[in-house]
Length: 249
Image (cartoon, rainbow, N blue to C red; front, side, top):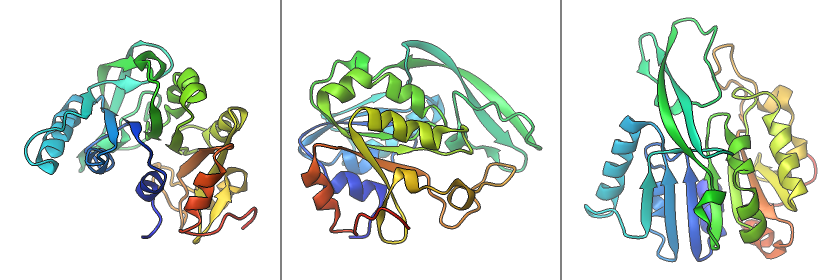
């Protein structure tokens, strides 16, 4: 098996609940929904995409969404309430739903207009979970708020976490989140050239270069960080089937 973010979750899967933050069309929710030892809670705040996510999940599971899967048309953050989600509309391309964000304004981008939608915001701590084993986060710059709203649950349940941390979405996020997780007793890694490197080894000048319009340009472009509880050495050992853990490039 080649390494991927999904492979990370599959390799370290344990019985319990998985949360998919920013489920979009279901790239992760679809496989998660078929894992028979897990319950899935998926969040997608954009109404149009939420309906497509529901249809995709039903089709993927023989016409019916499994009883172990629950979907919520909501964003996640650090406070329960509502927020404005901005969806960019690019001239000649239309709606770019994968860029929808609670924190980005898209100001100054030529040929880009913005559609605003008020969406409900939940917190992971508000779910009151005692069996959370994994979280996947893709929140287009809102990852810090998602994690702040999950603090008590992370401390209680010690889930594995995959999280996009991109400077093009929010300056400073690629160092803030690894530091936040380190303070919670987690080690952070990213996959680079057939090996796992520590989060601190990220070279933003060569690994996260984006165009003025915000598109990734560096090759490879590192966007996903992987977090494993420091006490779970056996999990890190299981990941070595993909490649070694190294301290430097």
